[in-house]
Image (cartoon, rainbow, N blue to C red; front, side, top):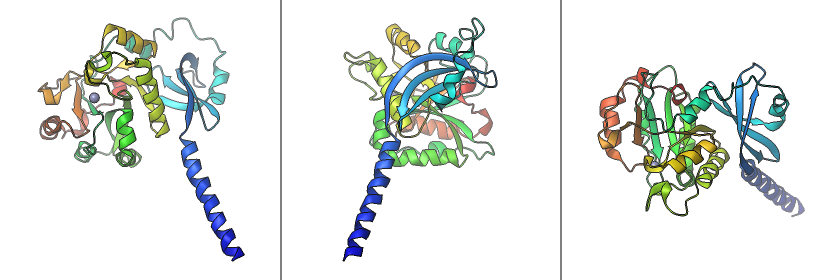
Length: 292
Ligand SMILES: [Zn+2]
């Protein structure tokens, strides 16, 4: 009887330990927008854009000012680089800062490929997996940008795990785009009264990090609707507004350099049909958003 009791207590203890560690591992606090430029060990310019705490460790979300790749690093590993002097103007003249100040991106002027962007606005429907399963076979992972909302992430844990598996198995290379936390629509998208852009942006980034995806430096406005005020606020958070000149369901035809927009949330089958029947097949024309 005593042995059985001890066994049960041990099982209960390990269950609590396991589940609490799962919950604690994804806890992010003190999430803040910052701007601290530094040259890394290879002399490459990076900027720490956000600071936060995860599992009691201070961490940064950083971006490479040249490649636009984002990453999460322990603050203790980055802090030693900050005191080193940077050449004058190198931050302002960097590719990252020039892109931020060029306004909403609707297509690439220098890259002749196409950029596939898939929006995940809130939806009860499952992820349209054909967007990935119907991509042509390729030795290299095919680049795709997924613009995700916090509401979608909260309701689609299984789809998210499936997406992550497609990445780890080398099928796709995903650029995770912030598409706001709640995706306001009525009466006027992000311009609606009471909507705070900073909350919609930063809380969604936090959510993305909590579920294990690293936000890129791109933000897509719900409905592609913004304003000068919203664009200025987005610039203050050091993000690039990601528009589109080829929203397929609206009949817009992709040209060289187009940012192609479809909805992967099940709410716009027309765009998916156009993608499948007209544009999906060629592996070599899809480009990574960071190459824009
Ligand atoms: Zn949307």
